[in-house]
Image 1: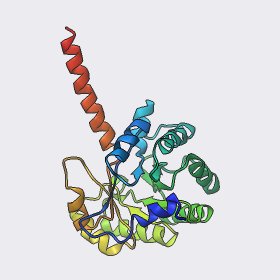
Image 2: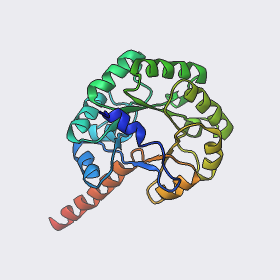
Image 3: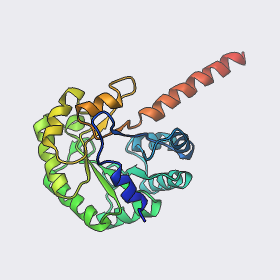
Image 4: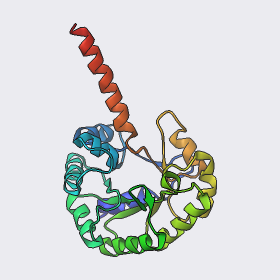
Amino acid sequence: MVNKAEAFRALHHGRVPDDPLVLPGPWDAASARVFVEAGFPALATPSAGVAASLGYADGETPADEMFAAVARIVRAVDVPVSADVEDGYGLAPKELVERLLEAGAVGCNLEDSTGGVLKDAARHADRLAEVRSAAADLLFVNARVDVFAHGDGDPERAIERAALYVAAGADCVYPIGAPPEMLPLLRSGIRGPLNVFARLGGASAAELGELGATRVTFGPGLQRRAAEALAEIAAELRQAGR
């Protein structure tokens, strides 16, 4: 019998260029159900979106609250859920894997920066290898490459870091913030699935797929769009009450 982790991993393979895996980012149980009811086969939580739903700034959510939020989302749906756990909250690889599996996650994002500064790539690769060893095939590891977010934006440097992470056992590489025009170069230099960050109103998932994306995620973009819509509704209610 195929478990959710195996099913999630399979979603990343055999895709045609104009049909990348689109993973909406739920920030709570209600939003997760909305995405599943719309037909999405899997979800990927955004740490910044979850933080906002809990009343925290991005990067300031206590680990216990983040794992609890992920667990609530997992319990609310029957599709695989991957969790953004930032840089791992300082947890040892074995404990990090245990916490993810206890929450019911089938995958995780792990950043290669902390406090806006890139980590030593070789040391981070060693950590990813430990996570992979502890998780075996029970977690899909998405290694975020922060060269475009917190580095110099050099695509060759991103490719070099990605190669270390893939060799360490990462299932997917996520060069967050990479400009669309750089995706063909990144695609040619990176082995395995490539996660691309999409902006609402920007290039479509199909267009990003044609450029090299295997999967597309939105970070906190969907939560922020929902908050904007709610602000408009609140303004209308306020105006109607005058």
